[in-house]
Length: 163
Image (cartoon, rainbow, N blue to C red):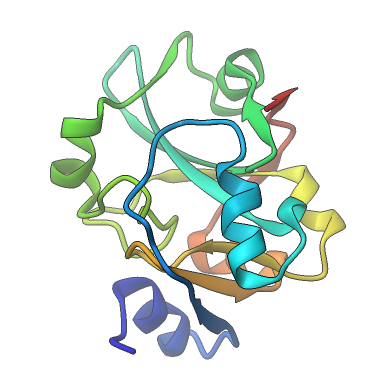
């Protein structure tokens, strides 16, 4: 398995993780059940899968959010956590130029630039969580506290409605 930027960052910080490969079908739509499909392929609980969502504020600041994949991000809570008046998801065609990642393979670690990052507090209820390794078809299994440290993230209540 080829090392990703996210893996190199964790290696450099001497943070333990496990990279888990799964068959990627190329479907990366915002659809109900996507987390369950990834979890099923990996044989892991769906509540341990966290998606990375990149948003922009009214001042064009890029902010990264990690949310339990069974729930949407509450935009109201995202605004409160970040102190922004407005937050909107970046368009799919903006994601690669901004982050270096494609949809379905966006990791909270190793983006082109370091952006403020927020992780939903539900991560702390899990022994380990799974986030994208930075490519489609590979998830990193990591302790939430280690991801928070590596991403220099702020823990916040971001949970919106259940998907």
